[in-house]
Amino acid sequence: MTLEDWRRRIDELDRKLVELLNQRARLALRIADAKRAIGLSNRCLDREAEVLQNALAHNRGPLNEVAIRRILRAVMAECLRLEEVASGDRGDEAGRDQGTDRGRK
Image (cartoon, rainbow, N blue to C red; front, side, top):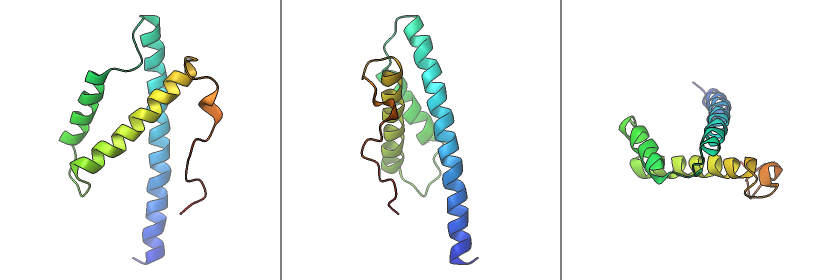
């Protein structure tokens, strides 16, 4: 395969990752609605630890445990931020682009 072929494959995977991340965020919002309905907090440290352990148990590399933890913590933090915005806890930040690397490669 050529360099361009590899890059096309990465681009395809990145699109799939974005799709999966948005699916995860939609589910997090549904969970937040269910939690609100029964009076629970958005954040559950026990569940966050469970999510990390479950993912790490299925990691086959080459990303190591530290890398997977960093990535998943960032994903969970963004989902939590989205839940807070949706519930009105953090104002109107849902539409703001906060410190992204948009346009950088």
